[in-house]
Every structure is written in structure tokens, then in C-alpha cells.
Length: 175
Image (cartoon, rainbow, N blue to C red; front, top):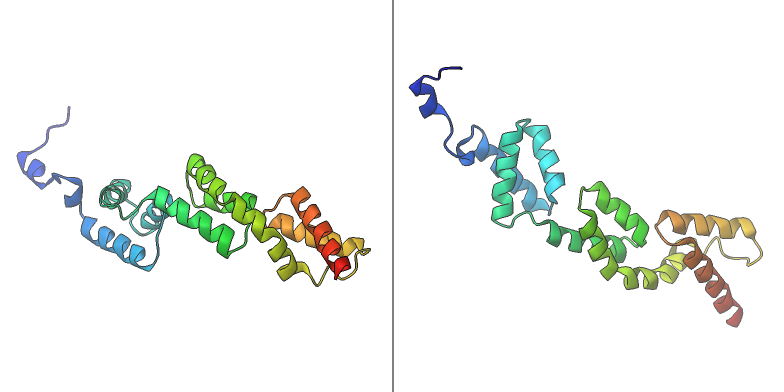
């Protein structure tokens, strides 16, 4: 059994907020949050790179969660909307990006389900915007495959892309 001198007990931090370096780590986290929103895992990893004390980083993150500065539900909803509507990603690519941020799978599925319709509506627009130069000739198989591969990399379903390309050429014939 290790004996502790009473002077050491008085020096020990009484709460997480009294940990050495808590204030500077908390201020650093607040400065980061002023620039943009972060999910829990992303901000925690950023703090761990700067302050490699797990207890300190957990204490800072706990305080940020308590005051609702870090909220994974809010972040997941906004990020899903950003990826699908602004970046033009399909559901698969958006899911991959969100998992990379460290978000919970249930949150990812919940908020991407809300964006499913927007992704379906984006598909023909993105096809025209990014790949219309490849789709000049309906008989050019290689050009079609380039467009399909690019759209699949953006996270769109292979069969949905095929149908969108068929619709694109059908509209071109009508004009």
C-alpha cells in the first residue's frame, strides 16, 4: 500500500476543470468551434494531438457536450445535408465521408435517409454538369463508362446512373 502525504491530497485536482492545462485546452477547443462545427470524435482527436492527456481531453469534451457546443446529432444532420445538396455526393459517398468523421452509424443512416430524395434529384443535374462532355455520342461505349465510373465514385447507385444516362440520351433525341 502506498502512503500519500496530506500535502499531496491538497494539490490533487478536485474536479476535472481544475486539471492542469484545462483552461488552455478548453479555450483552444472554443477557438476551433468558432471557426466551424466539429463532431465529438473529430474535435477530441484534434485536442489529443495538441494535448496528449486523455483525462484532460475527456474533461474538455464533457464540458463542451454539457453546454451543447458539441452535438453529434446536429452535426450529422448539417453534414449530411452539406454532402448531398452542396457537394453533390450520392448516399454511399456521403455515408463514407460521415463514417470517416467518426459519426455513429445510426445517426448516419437516419440523416442520410432524409437526404435520399435530394440525392435522386441531383443525379441528372450532376450527370449533365460534370459528364455531358463525355456523353456526346450515344454509341460511344468508353465515354459512357467514364461517366458511369465517375458517378459511381460520387456515391450514386450503378443502376440509377445507367437509367439517368439512358434518360439523358432520350432527352437528347427529343430535342
